Amino acid sequence: MTNRIIQIIVLIMLFVASCSQKTTTLYDYCNQLNISDTNMLINNELDSSLLLNKQRNIVYLLNAHCAPCIERFIYLIKNINNYRFDSLLVVAGYSYDLVNINFYMKKKNLSLPQNTRIIFDPTNKICVEKSNIYGDDDIFLIEDKRILYKNNTYCLKYDTICGYVIELNN
Image (cartoon, rainbow, N blue to C red):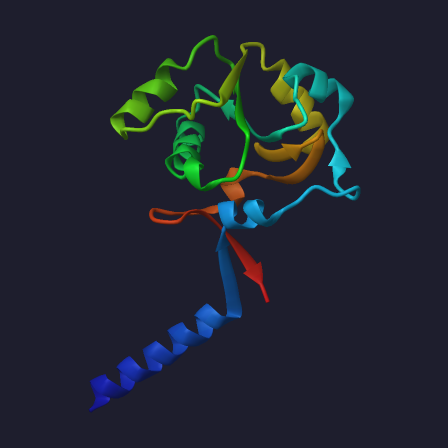
């Protein structure tokens, strides 16, 4: 009887905890975003470095020699087909190639989408410029040169089934 009461209490606690925070996937959240005049324009210098068009772009700034950074990028690529975007732009900082990234992607049986453009940034100039303007954010959703969403993937939780998850407080 005591075990049954404890199980019921634990079940109630889990239910209450799940109601206190609403979670949503990053791709569900981003797919609902639409451009408006209130969205911030991307910085002109950064825009000219990235050569963005008016399409919906996911821009990912990647330190190609950082194991945790590569792991977070792999998490994104694993669920990339769930995102609504026209092109993926990867800025590979400190790198002339994607040897490490390709190794881990092949190991996970993943590949970059066909609509991917890669900018190699061996001196890390673009990433430093981005950091000076936008801080530590490494993922951007940009459409018509306006930032719809930006975040640091370190701040996101990763679920093996759903991909990146955002916790929204009610």
